[in-house]
Amino acid sequence: MPVGQRVGVIADIPATELTDEDRRFIAQPELSGLIFFARNYQSPQQLAKLCADIRAERPDLLLCVDQEGGRVQRFREGYTRLPPMLTLEAIFHQDEARAIGLAREQGWLMAWEVRRQGVHLSFAPVLDIERDISRVIGDRAFGHSAEVVITLASAFVEGMSEAGMAAVGKHFPGHGAVEADSHKDLPVDERSEQALDYDLRPFAELMDRRLLAGIMPAHVVYPAVDAEHTAGFSRRWLQDILRQQLQYNGVIFSDDLTMAGAASVGSYAQRAQAAMDAGADALVVCNNTDGAQQVIDQVRLQCQQGWQHLDLQYLQGSMEQLDSDESERRAQSVRRVLETL
Image (cartoon, rainbow, N blue to C red; front, top):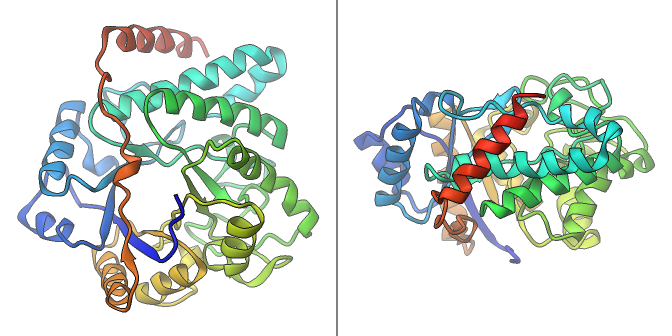
C-alpha cells in the first residue's frame, strides 16, 4: 500500500508486564507499534499474556521483535534456538535444494513460534551480503554472494508467509561492506555506485517478487550516492532510488534512532524529523524512554500540521490456525532437522 504522508512510532516498554505508566504511554495515538527485547520475555506463557494485555489497550498496535536466529534471537527459553542464517550457505554449495528447503522451514518455524504467542512481526530477513568485513552482520547474512542471498532469503520469506508473517528486508542498501557497527559508530561505505548496485540486488529482487512488506535502511553513509546523509536520512536513497527507481510502495521502517549511526543528526526530535523528511514511515526508537517520547512529540507536531497517523494493523496478519495439530507436527519435524546442523 502506498504510505505517503503518514508517520508513526515503534517504541518499547521496560519489563515483562504492563504498568499503569506503560498504559498511558501506549495510549498515545502517534504510537503504531511496540518492539520486544529479551527483557520483555520470561516464558511463552508470560509473553502471550503481555501481548493480550497490550491488545486489550491498543488492538491496532503492531507487535514486533528481532528474532532472526543465531546471535539475534530475543526469545530463547521455550523457543527453538535457530542457527545463524550463514549456516545455510555451506549446505547450499553442497545441496542447493536441501538448503532452500531448510531456509523455507526455518522461516516458517521462526514465524510460527513467534506468532502463536501474539507477536505479529519479526524484523527479518537480513539481506546484507557477507564480505567477512562487518562485525555486526557476519553470520546473520545468508551468504557471500547476491545470488545465494536472493535464493535463500526468498525461501525464508516464503516460509514466514506460510505462517502469516510479513517480511521486512534490512539493512538497505547493504551493510556488509563496512567494518564499523552502526550501533556504536557512523560507518562510511566508500565504494563506487556500481559496487553498491551489487549489494542492492537482494533488495531489488525480493521487491520485484513482492516478498517484502517493509524495508529498513542502514545507518551507513554511501558517499557515491549521498555524501551527507546515512541511507535512513537520505531522500536520494529513500525517495529517488527506493520509491521511484525501484517502485517500492511498502513501509519504510527507520533503523533504531538511538543508534550511534543516527546520533550525528542531533536530538531525538531532529532525528525523527530528518527521518520523516527523507521518507521514513515508521520511526523505530528503542531503549530510551525519554528519547521515544521526544520522537512521539515530534510526530504529534507533524500530525497537527497535516500528516496522518500510520496504521500498521494490516501487517498483523491472521492469527488463526496457529495451534493446529498439523503445525505442531511440522514444528517438531523442523526442530529435529535443525538439531543435526
